Image (cartoon, rainbow, N blue to C red; front, side, top):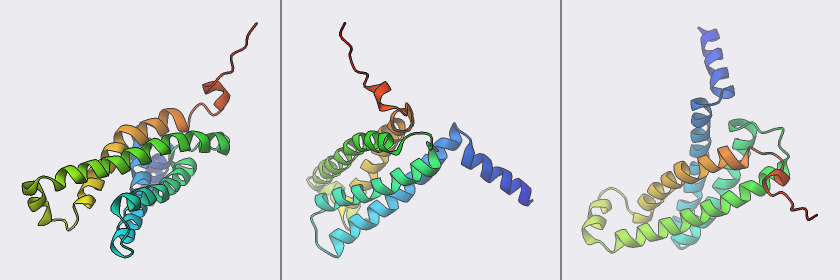
Length: 168
């Protein structure tokens, strides 16, 4: 019985394909939890405007995500950390912009619709939490996972991505 569990854990931790996708989603959930906790605490305890709190939460979640992805999800130990960091920052900037403005746009759009706001108010105190969940799921699936998989943790040498032009 324990051997079966051990083999399953090893397959989950080492194989690619759907297993890599599952690891990426797990890593994303860990980062999202830290992001959401920080965002909600900043808004509720410190009264920080939700857009700024969303930005700061995304920064903290991104740091957690980068570390977990580098060491466990994509196992890119052969890549130099500085190349991974540089490419991660490029993707991360896009992710932060999409999360921050997406949350702002959706929150403001929902807030202008009285019937939607009334429906959500029965389930969620703050509309921005609903918006943040929707936007973070879309950004995570459509932006982060794909760019991490095909750009950040691949092509380890940045010079291969941006080759110098040589004039003759």
